Amino acid sequence: MNRKTAGIVFMMCVGIAALADSASAQKSPGSAALDTSLRGAVESRNVPGVVALITDRERVLYQSAFGVADVATGRPLTTDALFRIASMTKPVTSLALMQLVEQGRLGLDDPAEKYLPELAGLKVFESFDAATGAYQLRPASRPATVRRFLTHTSGLAYPFTSAIWRDFKPRAGENYPFGGPLLFDPGERWHYSTSTDVVGKLVEVVSGQKLEDYFRQHIFAPLKMDDTSYNVPEAKGPRLVAQRQRAGQRMDGAIELQTPQLGFTIAAPIGGGGLASTADDYGRFVRMLLNGGALDGVRVLKAETVALMGQNQIGAVSVPALKSALPRSADFTFIADGRDKWGLGFLVTSDQVPGKRSPGSLSWGGINNTFFWIDPARGIAGVIMMQYLPFADAKALAVYDTFERGAYQLVNAER
Image (cartoon, rainbow, N blue to C red; front, side, top):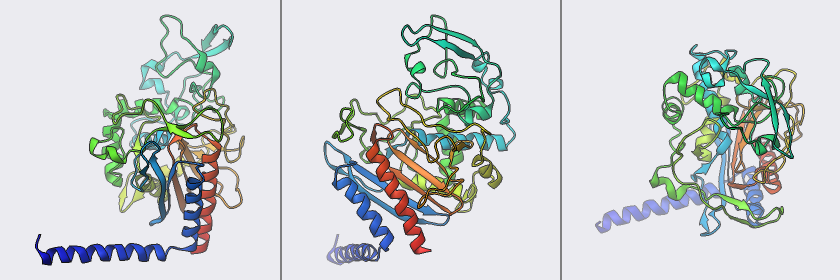
């Protein structure tokens, strides 16, 4: 490089740095207040690191990163960090299936066994003895429809949301492809479950594509979510946040690395979890939903379908708080416990909480304490990503609450 070229490069770098300093200096009071809150949560060691983003229908309003991506090495957390978003995969899978519903390739009220024969003849627990593990089963009173799997009213569970599933050991010759017998008849109540794994299988069977291929072609490429995938390319490995956990059972336990760490690849992707993504990519996903299924002139879902996904799909049934059956999650409640509803892939908030999201807002999270909400009434959405267990850790939830309140303060000040 000659001196003239080197001089030009140097001046460009100086200019870029000056622009960055200027942008920082011009940060709005709301953004600066959010920075202070999130930075304080990290500096007080409440959480090891956090990336947060706020968007409206047109653009990103706020984005920052604080803390470390690896507590062992001190690697700084950056806004383009890759997080394993676990159950934040579920809305992506649900949207994929709704694309196929739009095309008339299956119906919401079709029995799911029409497409997945292994779901025929589902059995329900009639009794379960916690002391001995002995159980009695009976046939389900009705088939589980596609809608039931999209709404977690299928009767399935998770080992961490059901002590019965945690302790259940099938007898010889019994096979339960999605984890176990049903806790209740389909449609009877809501219970967080492997239902979206069934939704993922439906996507694969009806489309004829593997999940990652379908997602990439029909969702990620159109939305330019270039950093979202099940399998993380090795070149992006340095951006992947380490898996961590709070030591012991104490709320104030130190954050340490999990052993073993997840690798870059997911051997068998499922609809209920497993994606890696960034706050920016997931911000594009929620901004698309704020815009009724379109982003930057590209439509992935009809506006009426997006509206349907955000409506109560469980009738008089409500979403209750859940007690955890495993230490990887704390007990967790919702915005209006016992009154919240579920749409087609999202929790639907029923009540207005002062300073927070509007009724009709959509939300969910991932077990590593990654969260999002979408507020169509106010036209904003937020994404906040941490990366450690247990889910619903009190300090992580406090940071989430502070972030959401700060988001509305920022928006109120700037509109």
